[in-house]
Image 1: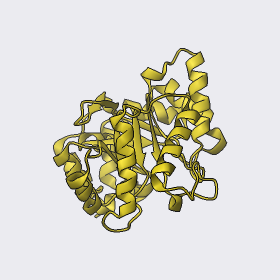
Image 2 (image 1 turned 135 degrees about the vertical axis):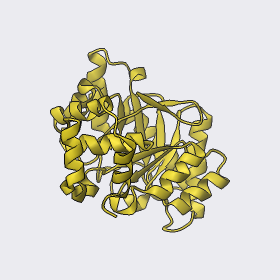
Image 3 (image 1 turned 90 degrees about the horizontal axis):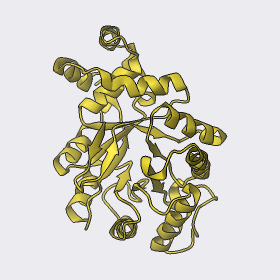
Image 4 (image 1 turned 180 degrees about the vertical axis):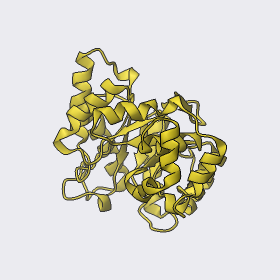
Length: 279
């Protein structure tokens, strides 16, 4: 299954996230693709990601006949405040140069000449959008204009910031990637904006941010009814309410089970119950 953005580009309906995989990144990306994942998310940020090791996996996969075109690659520009001393760009350079250097470094790491999706890892400002945000967004837009990336997006963004970006940017984001908490209505305000503007909402930490959901008897009875795991109930819920979920599981059995969640469909009353759970 896939989802189509407002610009006509399609993205697989489930994504494998590579954060916090460290030296296991290469092996786990290969495992994820072998299990059926065709969309991979990473970032050019050495604190949490090993983008170059994702690239190593891609080289190995190419030897096995998995072409670049058959995979959806998404990476991110991470501002200085999200990096340690190992920045993939000259931290003293102007922001436009930083983005250009980071982008080129990502292409080198991933052994490709284009990206499927390029994402701003998070705004510089806590509230609103600063001059820095607009300069970086313009640099990201330029890669979209030149065809170097098929989609652009933003992560870790509030509804207020996303609304501003959609109103004033030359190109609205095509994807929005946020941590998704059941306690806050599964990021309902941001999801509503995505629905209005036809942006693809990518939800991460769907399991780790919502451990309390798994103790709910209702979720357990749904898992029993559909003969599936608790995680798969949450992933299927997310897809049915219009999200594209990320999973970062390191277990091949779980990878396969997660992808199989599209085999069942939750009833409307079940979706409604999960929407309000934990609030």
